[in-house]
Length: 105
Image 1 (cartoon, rainbow, N blue to C red):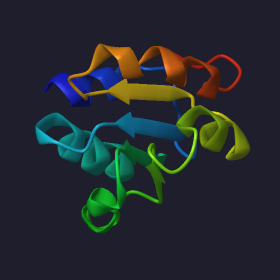
Image 2: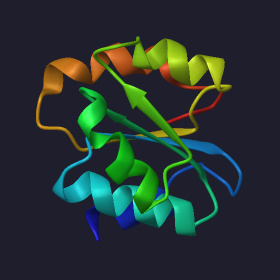
Image 3: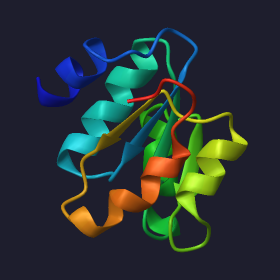
C-alpha cells in the first residue's frame, strides 16, 4: 500500500514520467503499480544487474546510477512528475531533486 498510495495521491497523470529509485522490495512493486497506472516509468538503481528485472516488471527506462547522473537522465526525458524513493540510503535522495520536471513532487 505504501508505494501504491504514494503514486495514487501524487500529481502525476497518465503518460507522465514517474521515477522509482531503488529496485528492491518496495521498488519492484512501485514499478509495477506505476506501469499499470499508465505512467512512463523509469527505474533507478546502482549497477546494471537490476536492468533486466526492472524492464521485465514494466519499467520503460532503466537508469544505472553508477554509470550516469540519474537526475540528468530524468531531465533528458523531460523531468519526472514523481520520484518514489525506496532505496535505503538517504544520501542518494538529494541528488535526484534536480530530476523533477515542472510541478513535480
